[in-house]
Image 1 (cartoon, rainbow, N blue to C red):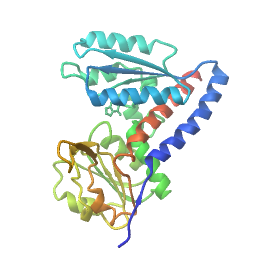
Image 2: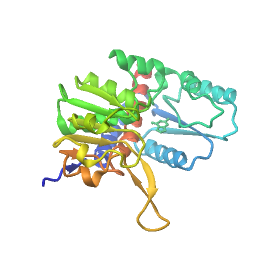
Image 3: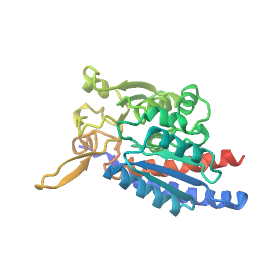
Length: 290
Ligand code: GUN
């Protein structure tokens, strides 16, 4: 039995941040200012607070300016839109990220639409998703772009490969499919209503799992030699009573003997998301600086 490789997303992301640091030094030398990232956090969701803190810390570490805006869950739609307008007009701010999900009374799509597309470092604005879809330069969602970097690092040219993306979210599944199509893969988007998911997944040379269901994709579904990218971050009960642990969307322990390579959870895709966010902020800063 051969054992597949674990893809070191954590290490790859650290390397990416080192490269960014050099580019940021050049940017500062040329423009006399640091690129700036504004992160907006609404409410008290503990997981979101952890992500935001980590984003802020890494933003500063690579040499950029971090602006954090915490607002209570009770903020009105108009107040939030006003804050975004302010950030759109702030010359120190190159990137704006509104941490999702937002409290239910807020209209997420309207909030995203209010962000200047040139500062939309999440790549969620319809201008950016439309540009990605037609193959124009765009700010591309961080998680799928991070997944693509890992895939290209592992496989080189992806042209002609069979790719199955499990999950159809605007944040991961749909932009991931667009990126793979851009690399000339044959792309299938599967989801919770897909019939016989096992045989759909079994066709794939590349599997990207982003369904948000703990270990739903079983090892025996994976075609021998496939590369598997596991985007899932699911908190489940651990073996030890009262403890929890994080698992992905793929049953990694089973899959490892089928795959050529697979991303672990944690330490796979997760660290890539923030590294790409920082990269997108630098890209936005360079475009704005002309
Ligand atoms: N919540 C979960 N993932 C993301 C992301 O990539 N960007 C934002 N803004 N919120 C998220």
